Amino acid sequence: MKKVIKVNIGNLAFTIEEDGFLILKGYLDEIQDHYGPNENGKEIVEGIEERIAELFIEKSGANSVVQTPVVKEVIEILGRPSAIDEEQGEPYYSTTSSKYQKVHKKLYRNPDNKVLGGVCSGLAAYFSLDVLLVRILFFVLLIGFSFFGMVHIGGGSFMFIAYILLWIVIPEARTVEQKCAMYGEPMNIANMGAAFEKGIAKGKRSMQNAAGGGARVVGAIGRLFSVILAVFFVIVAISGLTTLFFLFLGIEIFQGVLPIDMLDYVQLGMSNTIFLKIFLMAFLMLPLVGMLYGGIKLLFRFKSPRIRPGLVIVLLWIVSVVGLGVTSVKSTRPYWSEAKDGGQLPLSNDADTLYLDFIADTQIPADKVSLNAGYSSYSLFWMDNQSGEERFVVFPSFKLIRQSSQEERVLKYATFSFGHNYAQALQKASKSVPTVSMNDSTITISPLYYSKSNKWDGTHQIISVYVPDSTVVIVKGPIEHNFDTKVSREWIFGNNQSRICDFDRWSDRMEDKFERMERRFDF
Amino acid sequence: MKIMNEINTDNIKSQMRKGVLEYCILSILNNNDAYASSLIAQLKEAKMIVVEGTLYPLLTRQKNQGLLSYRWEESQQGPPRKYYSITDKGKDLLAEMDSAWEEIVETIAFLRNKK
Image (cartoon, rainbow over all chains, first blue to last red; front, side, top):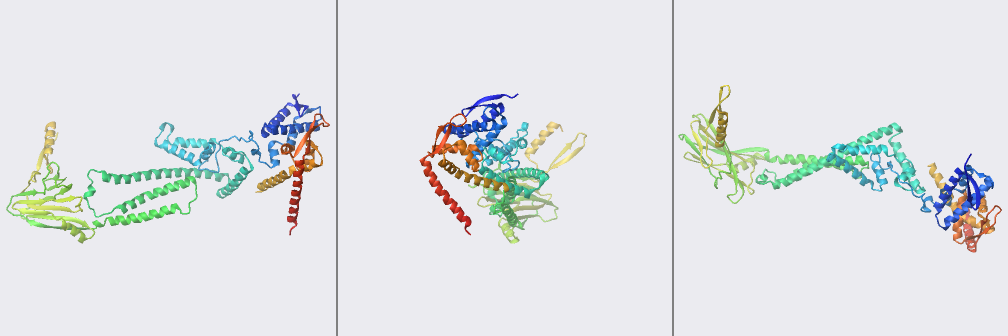
């Protein structure tokens, strides 16, 4: 038993099987939609209906029930709108704005434009965005998540896992139809042609690349690793370059910001270090630039431009290595040779006390000096601007050497200096020989002054006094010092053992400290 | 590559058919007035159309262009049917189409026989 329906087609009554009726109704709706609701559309539908009626009578007779296969046959004879348009030579989609033109946009992975799985490319097509934008967004999020460590969702791995999931879940657009649906474009000859050509090109490439499924899997895994490597390269390169940039920038800035820019008072023989800096920078940064380029190239798989940036980077790096070597060696030139210039003064044999007078052309600012004094050495310098200019006042290092009474009492003074060759070093040394004078039992020592206009050139002055043990040596002036104040303390430990400790460098402050300690530990 | 060739030939054929289909309709109607069904029968016989539905949009278009008109006439089976006939404007166009057609045929023949 089958359900039948009575209908009026082309002003004639027919009895049609229910399925057949539904199919016929769908077909007529299709025609109506395609040709539109206007007068023309109505006329065309009328004509076609008329013809359907004729064909029904022809096939099944006027009074019998129209079977479903007959309905299908008749529809085939008249043709669906796509077949009609094709026969008329008009592209199917362009006739009207019917619902058949609207192609449902679907989310696919794009195999024609992919870095890894074509996920970003597919998303870009779906949301009608630029692929590059989506990729940058994805990358920024990946890095962002990594940096700001959203630990509870796994940091950077969140985006990574999300990508893998999307890769698995979203199907790849394989057929021309799917590729058109990916962009939401209707299928037509032009699209098909373009897609077809693309397919051929791709086929060639994949034939070159690999044959068979096994190779494809290996290729995919290899691609995954190369992408991970590429991302790693890019991250390392960017962070490295940033660090180096700020390092160099920082050095340049802080050199000028330091409260006392020591380098302003120093003349080390390298008048211009700019080349050294440039070569050092190139030497450190170029490998990172190369890494960045390589990573990006690996990631987006583009062909090298004609200028071959990779080769250029390598060549530049070799140049920077050579340059750095040469400038480094050159910068050590002022230190290749060492020289000494000085003299000696005899000391009177009868004096049992020797006085040292350190005299500068300005007052010694007792609260500012830097002093390093023990029972065999005394070195003193300070910085002030009493003379109107900020300058260092540096006395030669004083050394006291005890010897037997038979040996000659003598004062030796000398300047040690470096230079490119001996002659240069000697010239430098002789320019800054210590000024020492002897008057009765007082030795007067003058300092050297270094300022921005008269920079320190790396020389070192020493005054040595050779006297017997019995001679007392005392520094006069505001910074008094008795070289013979050898401080001995007896320490008694818990097991009643005692030990005598001698202190070479003793000061009032140490005395205070020691007394406080004694009180606390009840020595 | 084979598929591409087929697509192209089909396309060329349908383009050619489209060009002459309207010419065919006018030619048929120039001889006799006709129902749509008899037009279809003749065109199918001449292998000018495959799907019958193709005819109806063309008839509508030509009627709108004033190349043909129709009147309602009783048919053997039941209700009245549209009976198409060519107009004067249609005849003018047909004459032009005839000469154009002859020209094309001559040209093709000339080109094909040229050695």
